[in-house]
Length: 208
Image (cartoon, rainbow, N blue to C red; front, side, top):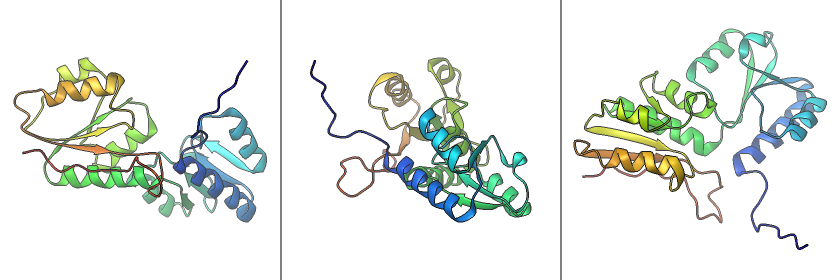
């Protein structure tokens, strides 16, 4: 039996960066807390736990004076405020591409756009994007959500990295075909670093 290895495999840029940061943090601080698992990989999570990384759901479980880490999915502004108030040192491992999307979503919301996030309602990255718009953005999970949504004339849409295919692509197609939606922007993130990669984080200007 032949086993073929993909030319590109392993962790994405953001996750690699977060794992390296976590390992360095445990060497400096000993025990640290991770706001959610850094990666959906049991073996890696167990290895991090052995090094001193304890996974918690939120800052409520973190004692004042401790060190906590924000994972690649990012967190809402309240997390940063809460950490400062409770004297918790935050290590921010938010993926730079995710952070760019968060800022873009907040900027478009401030400009009066209706911000839609295509994704799962319980996904931490989608929730964080909504929180960066002050709760104004709407998460669209499927066709039913889109059908029941009152779409305005100025819409900014955040698509997942694989939006070109599958349900996310179909949701975008349905939205862009709505006759009364004349102006829309697509906010996209990427999981590869800028150098040497064809996939970049892009923010496309509004259609006219």
